[in-house]
Every structure is written in C-alpha cells, then in structure tokens.
Length: 287
Image (cartoon, rainbow, N blue to C red; front, side):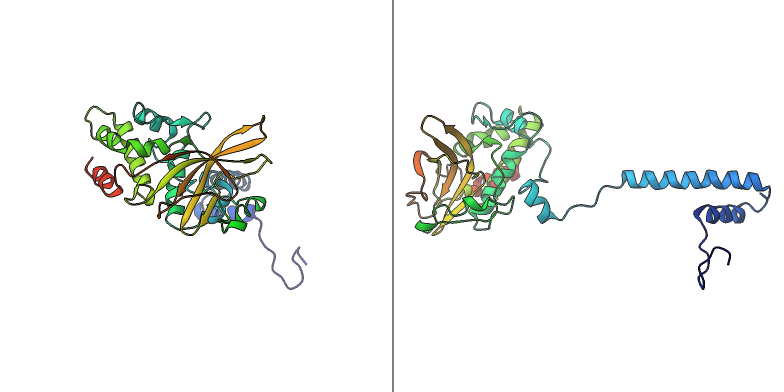
C-alpha cells in the first residue's frame, strides 16, 4: 500500500493539514518552497498559541473537599485587609493579638474564628484529618472527637471577645483608616457567624495539660452532652515536667463546664458575651 494499514485510510500529518489549509486560503501561492515556508510559519504560530493557552489557563480546581483535607477549613478565605498584620494594627490598644504566625501574609485568625463558629453550631469540623491516635481522648468519660480538624491558630484572638464594644466604636470612627475599618468589619462578621457571642452562651478560654507524648491535637474538636471543646493551638511544652499545654475554647450552653476528658485544667478565663451578636451585626451593617 501507500503507508496506510490494510483497510484503513492514511491519516494526514499536522504539516500536511496546515499546508492544505494554507493552499485553500492562499490559492495564488503555488511556488512549492514558498508554500512550504508559509505553512511551517503558520504551524509554528499555532503551536505557540497552544502553548500560551496552556500557560494562561489556570489548573483545574481540586474538589473543595480534597482541598480542605490538605489545606484546612476556609483555606480559600483570604479577604483583603483580613490578614494578621492588618488585624493586629486595627485592634491595637484595645485587644492585643498575641502572635503565633510567622512571616508573610496569613489569614489564620479569621479562618479559625469562622471554623470555631462552625463547630460550635453543631456542625462537624471539616479540615485536615485528626491523627487516629488522638481521637480516643476522653472516650472512657463519654467524650467523642470529630474525625477532622479546624485550622491551627494564627494569632491568640479570644481576648478580642472582651473588647467588642470599644472595637465597634473604633470601627465607626471617621479618623480610622479604611483598611483598619475593613479589618474590624471582617472580624465582626466572622465572630457573628455562630454562637461565639450569643447571649446566654457560656464560653471560657482554657489551658489544658497532659503528659507530653508528641501528640497532635491542634484543631481537635471534643464533644460531650452539648458541650464543645476546640483545641486552638499548642501553647508550650514544659520539658522540666514532661507535660504539654494546649490553648482551647470550652463552650457549654448549660454553663456547667467541669473536667475536659483526661486533661488537667491549668488556667481558665471566662468570656461572657459583652456585646451580643445581634447588636454587633447591626453595627457592622451601619458602618
């Protein structure tokens, strides 16, 4: 035959297809070498166009669930002026956001607040998987652990809950820069998404201690009888005593509290709702 497999027509090459297209588009172009040169030029341009298209086309989005499993809850939430540095500047003097974050821009505080409200609302944590070795904490006492986690701490933010009223006044001040006003409004929106500042809710910040065994508990959510404990971050390891301290929030709608699983309570700070969510939301709408 003529290069075709038996019974199958020959498939023209890309060069042949381009050459034929050029011949049809430019019928006056009959000199073979010139036709070949123009066809080669057209083919090169087409290859370049395909390369550019592949370069500028964003990669296909990974499914949201898969992204949460590798990057954490609200990993795609990075609003302008909602980063740690701007939040720290906007709250300075009224609530000191202790630093946990490193260099570069980070949105850990707003992401964690939104995730905490999510789990305090009764919905399961939906971020990175919690190591299986950590899930059994408190099981003997009726505690159960969510399978997934909330984001780890960005800045130590619970003190903000006690300063919402003066922060709301600051947000309404005409002398505040627009970026700082925007940061405060984003903070208020995140806080009012769930029961963090609901009237009648009982919330305390706690430091929980246990023997240090290289546990991974950051972002762990523990539940028992309507009560929810969220491990925000690891505060420190005391190598002298061989213990690790975790910073956590303990939310008990009944206000009873009590022991948390097997942990020793080292410190607690109450955070009563000093500026209810509905009032804060109203301020946010007005500013």
